[in-house]
Image (cartoon, rainbow, N blue to C red; front, side, top):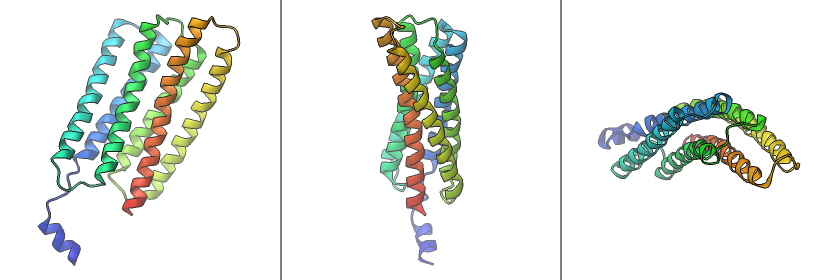
Length: 212
């Protein structure tokens, strides 16, 4: 009874934040597919332009999110949670785009099996990211959200294995010192993007548990 009265008195919760999250997750997925294309088909100027486009798009969505948050009285989830998810989504995209830029800056034109495997895992992670972010607006679907989180954990663990083998190979003596530094940067950026995918997934589980 009281909740019905309050719902009529108070302004509606602004649910546009969920739309922003989904847009941002889609940009992460697009960037991951771009990195996959580069790893398997090579880097060219068109792909660098595309990377810049995704970087600007992600930053703009983040700015819109914070601007809307600052002017919104009632939010669908805690304000701090909105800030955290927004920042983490933008971080994923930054790490992927940074890896793309470094491939050009370091003049890497031969892509290792590890880079290719990382790119494949990254696409899987960002696809799952889109799924779980889309579920956030349905906070009562705890079971489905938790299952998505388990899948993300498996993807992230697989990414850890790829990184371990990549680093082991990197310091095997097969590469010169400069190549080691260049490839390590690429590997680390993609690994951080994968880690952040799981961090967001975990954050979403915590949000829905708190809301239920």
